[in-house]
Image (cartoon, rainbow, N blue to C red; front, side, top):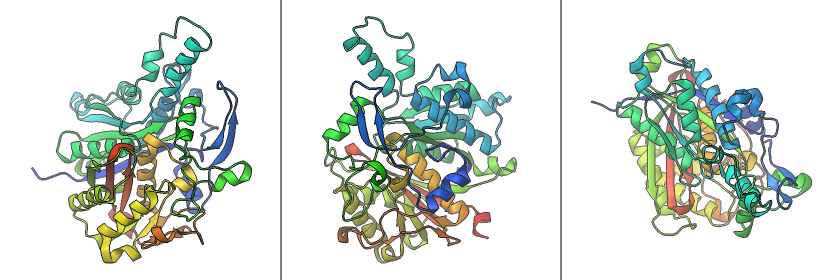
Length: 421
């Protein structure tokens, strides 16, 4: 059997800009940062750092109080985004045909999962001296909570898997969902990622690595500056994004709207260092995605870069892009939208894949914010998108995710035919 084509038919998100797709993408096109300086005192000691928070999100309003009470925040965000993607795809909440149930599944990514539940438990035991924890502690903290709830709520009888690979978690989940449909093992897959990282322990761990960008007050909005000569590190955030993937024939038969086509998935491991990235490993993943998608380098009109604004990571990614795209690299539009929505860790690949799909569907490119006039000479050699570009031709695009541990995942998308007319 020939590999099946895979359509993206549903999109959903919970972001600091809200959940409306048009509003979210328009804010990115305008270069509007959602990064703010936060000070929280609901921890053993105050946390003070630039952060991206979905502060207007209400779990009870989105999910109802009974369901919300069974979840930790990363699941609140993930399940809500997934429900919106399911609705956007126009699919039934509970398929009646048993055969359909068995061919519909979920692959989800997270890095830290229910870390808030466990940290709360540790605090109760070791600081407050309690000897009993909530009986929900395990189910609140388990990393597969999102795909478990989604399978139950939506009647998904196919595979239900979670993926944990640091910052590549969501992209791997999306890639594995793609592979299942492509191979004929599934007709519909709900996929994406979510993380909620604002805990005292997580903040102090990243702070100890000296990788968190400084920034207080109004300066926090520009704290994350990927590819800039004065970049100071990453900005953590919380959020979720979800995609509904569907075999092209299945989507076409029911008259579904197709946002874009997912055509390739590349994965590799640097196999060299736990935290130091390697251009050769990243290039292998990009080449695999291009090859699987039948794409030539000069057909790619956009790359949503991993671009975390770390000193080592940014030049390595640009070196990998120059290696893969060769003579096309100086004309290759590249942007890192983490400069505006922050680094969502295990959810990063999902929100960036969603941004890439919207770029194809709307034929517009979001910028790397705060980069104009600041490009590091070591990060030159590509066409950095400095301001939003609307009404430009975007035939195909890549979304890059490169993680600690050397895990690399790259997703290749093509524009749906309707988007190019």
